[in-house]
Amino acid sequence: MIGIATAWIMVLLLGGGFALDRVLADAVTRNFDNQLEYVLTAMIASAEIGPDGEIFLNRPLGDQRFLEPNSGLYWQISGKGHDDFPSRSLWDRTLEVDQSHEDEEIHIRDSNQFRDEPLRLLERTIILPDSNTKWLFQVAQSRNGLNSQIAEIRSILVNSFLLLALGLIGMAALQTLYGLWPLRKIRSAIADMRTGQQKRVSDPMPNEVTPMVDELNALLEHNEKQAEEARRHAGNLAHALKTPLTVIMNSATAKAPDLADTVIRESGVMRRQVDHHLARARAVGRRGHAHSRARVWPSLQAVERAVGRLYKHVRIDIDGDQEAVVSIERQDLDEMIGNLVENAAKYGGGSVFITVESNDEFVELLIEDDGMGIPEEERIRIFDRGVRLDSGKPGTGLGLAIVRDVAEIYDGGVELEESEDLGGLMVRLKLPKSEVVEG
Image (cartoon, one colour):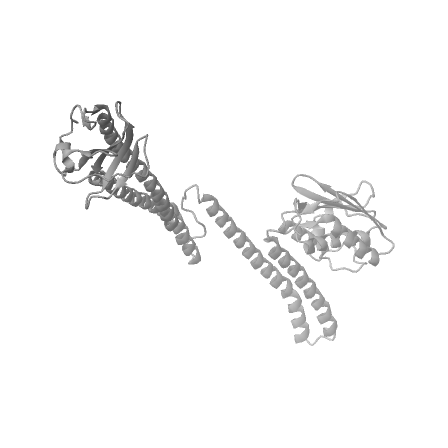
């Protein structure tokens, strides 16, 4: 950042300095030329033709330097067929005359005809009264004084712009270091969190980095929550497996005659517990994905086809918002809908009706059947793992528990109500709404 600021400052100062140098140099040169033009005009106004046809000045020019040899200020009048009429300051020298052109207007040029004395020369061609000769009036002055003024101006400009560049670069460096200094504090805070000295970035920060700090703290909280959930799931799984393992060990130690049946039965219990906790772990891992989105209608159609093949006597109808999108992984959505629709088909009387409703924040799936329903006092207990109200039909008793756990992981929920239209059970599955589907 400091390097880019330095380069940009140098480009701007070089451009501005060059432009300012041109403006000031032109102004000094223009003032120099205006003084010579004034002298040239005075010469023309004082010039007359004598009786012998030669030109003379009826009054001397006021600058004393015209009378001092090699003074650096000169004039000369030339005419074809006449001797040159020079100022005394030229002494034994003359100004060059370019006969190839005539200048009815003032012509300004530089001349190097005198060794070690560059000249600035103004000339103009005039026809005086009582004369047919075209007289060339010339005024010249040494450029040494002009060049010295321009050099002094450039020296002042260079020194001033160097000081300005150093000041601006120093200010940019200080601004950059001061502006990025909070990042050092954040780095130090992260190092403290890594060593366990603190859990969050708690020091006050400038407004510019406060949103980043808030996001960092939110990410840490999210990771801690996931880690805590993982520890809790591991503990729950260990607790769930502890009892079946104890039963198997006791039967094996006692050499019970029904050991084989006990191992098969308890192994089934452990397998169901492992499947349940694996489903929760997969949902927790996928929940943090920023692009978890799924369309509800294709999932319903896929589940309808799958359940329809298992329960051919059941009629499944779907209605509602076909464009609904939820912030959930498609696999988890299919698993929740599959469990609920399969339960409705298994325990209902042959009719299942699914309605999709959307509001500003959530998408609700209402899954109704025409079965016996669930008494209100049993609707909370039914979500416990392994609880089955109808043990006469195959199942693990984990379907509703998985649906509830996965829905809560995605900040949703599930409720059991009575179906007003079909008379059986209505499951209200509420899931967070999304507006965009990736891919």
